[in-house]
Amino acid sequence: MPRPNVHTACQDFHHASETARRDVLTRRQLLRWGIGAGVTVYGAQRLPTRHLLDAAAAEAAAAPDAPVLVSVFLPGGLDLLDTLVPLDQEGPLRDLRSSIPAGAPVPLAGTSLAVHPALTRGPAGGLKGLYERGQVGFLPGIDYANPNLSHFASRAFWETGMVSQQSVSGWLGRWLDRHGSADNPLQGLSSGYDLSPTLSSVSAPVASVSDPGDAGLYLSGLWGEWGDAAVAAYAALARTDATAPGPVAAARGARFAHQVAQQLAPFARSDDSAPDPLAGPVTYPTGNDTADRLRVLAGLLAQPLGIRLATVDADGRFDTHEGQAATLTSDLGDVAEALAAFQADLAARGLADRVLTFVWSEFGRRPEFNESGGTDHGAGGIAWVQGPRALGGILTDYPSVTDLDPESNLKVTVDFRRVYSSLIVQWLGTDPAEVIPGAAGFGQVPLVRA
Image (tube, rainbow, N blue to C red):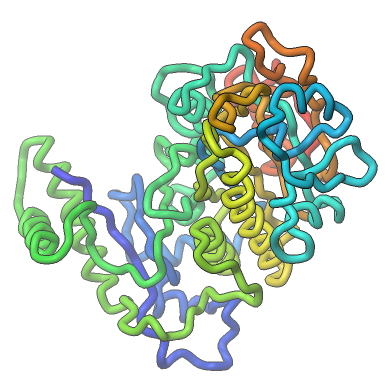
């Protein structure tokens, strides 16, 4: 039986006051409008849904300046050498990948490095502009020892914070299990239709944010007459009085879903032209899915919802086995432009000092080009932190393109779990050993301004 997804949404805003501030909604507006975006709640069967916004407002009121960590995933394995170009290794690098022009890399002042020109896209010089203002800290050479170059395994390791094949919760989900709320699923948000495994928890409720305007009960893959029939079937199931464990669980889920759908039906937007209460002062690029997700997230962060952790899966094809030059120019540029707009939006809303963004990919690429003008799966990737509180600069050692590992890959210069431990201590202010097994052995790397 398919699992129901329950979405809440804002209602028609034609009668909203024109003088109401869009970046700070009142509690009355929250209760009237919903939270302004579709939300799927996970692990919340036991929650009294009518109190969801009350719980969120209480969380926000109790800690209005609580730090927020945003995790942005670049799928496919972003290439370090073409994103953050080592100018002092230009000769050996050209020998390895002469058929992959880096375009015109833009030098970073005071370093022997340059960035891909796509990183200059966006407000105020894009990510390069943020770097020049001390708000980006690059982490070249990030990975783990003896890396597994499978997309699925490597991504799972990063999502769980454990290099292990066992099925475990996400590293941010584990943090919420220890330090989150028992009744506010908005504390951990995935910007999209599905929950990021990084936020998968054991007991703490979390949620995913989808397209503003969604409302009602939705079953994945069903729509039209079939969808209506399925919703009716779930409504009937919710009225059953089952006794066996399986049917009891199904009936409870159906009852919860149908109840929430009924409660939220009046809040559905009936007119797409109605003003968006989440709209901010910054214009995001159009036709850019990553920008859309970050735009919605910025609007939600401006509300008193008690959000502490958020995840975004970026759009783009970073598994560049072929045509890497064109792909990075296009897709890396779209992501960079979206991230720059997001940072400008947070600053304009007065939220930037509270939000630290961590950008990562599951591995790097091989130093040597292949016959298709691309690079295959490799080690020693790139990640970065961004925001006014991020420690700017080059924060880890850049790997050598001549001193490679036995598999002819870049050597790993920093373990991703060291970075996770550092984020937990320096930004979230808690003991990383609660979340990352063996955290003490990984040490820390400075990521946040004192």
